[in-house]
Length: 337
Image (cartoon, rainbow, N blue to C red; front, side):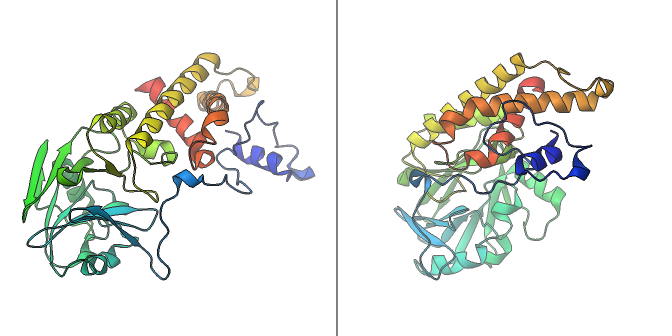
């Protein structure tokens, strides 16, 4: 996008010296600020998207999910721990608060950490593994192990136990069912189910009450990502731990994300059909294929954002933060996947 000139125009910041290089903004620009334009203020977070507050003086909170299972959250990241007869199973160790996980566990039990489950390989979810101490057995999908061997990051130890499709973790009378449903967010991202507690944890796929993180949470396979959202909705559980945002999720939250995904796909498809490459471009730029496609893709995204804004800007927290990102990702997937 002609973002820098556009940002200056929208801000009223073009000086006389800039006039020669400034260009007019695209027609029908939405109120949602485009990438590269700093918003004066983002839209308010709807009350329905908010979760319990962090207790005063703490950087995390602990939520009892029932029957020995607990969620730890700093209201941006989420992880879990499961108390069993002989110790504790931890699921993920976000570096933003991993140093506090032992204290959170100690407030519930004096049993040691015996197992650590990785949801996937990304550092922002497991980069605090070393801070847990001890030498727990580390369990993950075989693709996660492959990625961590390649990364050679001392803060993310390579798993000691791996699996391909399914793995039942039995520890001191407790059970976690781990399963792999293919690439979506990234290879190796697994579903972690606590059947007795009717809890499902899937990270970086559903964002209860919120717009997904940018470019559909950086999904490596967008069609796979959409399929996993629907698969989560079809499963039997009562509480969803999503790895992000400030509260747990419900089936209603998943249904909303399925609806948003469908609207996003339809809006991007309509935008592609209605937009002609090179239309309105300076003739001097038409022999530059990068310029032709940059202009085309920007106009497709603009059309898509305009279509989504009236409904979704008031239904999903953070819509205005990542609306452009989602439209770019969806347009790209429809054109080339």
